[in-house]
Amino acid sequence: MQSAANIRIGISGWRYPPWRGTFYPKTLRQDDELHYASRQLNFDEINGTFYSLQRPSNFNAWYDATPADFIFSVKGPRYITHMKRLKEIKKPLANFFASGVLGLGEKLGPMLWQFPPNFKFEPDRMAGFFEMLPRDIKSATKLARSNSEHLKGRTVIASNVNHPIRHAVEIRHYSFKVPEFVTLLRKHNIALVNADTAGKWPVMEDVTTDFIYIRLHGDKKIYVSGYGNAVLDSWAEKIKLWSTGREPADAKRTADPIGGTAKHRDVFVAFDNDVKVRAPIDAIHLADRLGIKAGKARAATFETSGD
Image (cartoon, rainbow, N blue to C red; front, side, top):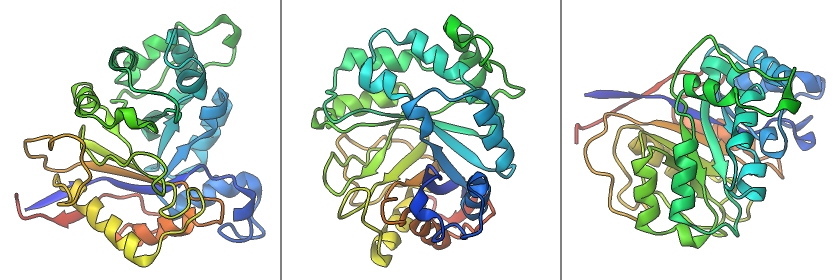
């Protein structure tokens, strides 16, 4: 039989000066970079949200610059993950979802929550955070209405669409590498980010929900290394397996397999090895291996044996 999987291959951010004249044409205006990048790939992480709250006008501009079937993931604020460290975060969460995120509408993909290397696994704290996360546009709108007074006049707390909101978590402390954490993610239907960090931080390839989120920071030197043909071939094969509901035989799991049979899983892949202008080129090469053509954000279909 066949199983259709929505596979998204993209980059983390799009505004990098070294890309100008290399990935981006020399004559391209800076304001047109997202327009250009979104015609080469079908997915992008918005990482400016990690550093500060954005304005609704920014999200509206990003929406307008991209094709109808383009998808963004949005990186959660470091104020929540790194500074507040998940303590007393209801208001910051409300401010984040009120800042214009919901204006992305049907182009809103997973929310990405990245934790710092010194953040250790505390089950109760993580569970409390997971329980606070909105799971669809409607619940996010309700949360956003409790935003801080100082944001008055610069919020968007409504959307003309309602669809599920997915969440993915990237960890960087080895205390998370325990079955208990994997079980907690599965209980709350949250994806564990499969992060390639050149061996700097934990590698965990456990499947925890109905989609896969992969971040490729570099396989030899973090943020710098490009990906060679053999490595890209390997990732392409893994993605085909995950997308068709299976798992690689050599998957680096911390817990037992999730169990059951999935018809397919959506897969999101973001290249974050941007220092030497490798990210967009590597992303295009991986997309080519998966039959995802430039400028066509479409589902990829692979043959499965039914197992």
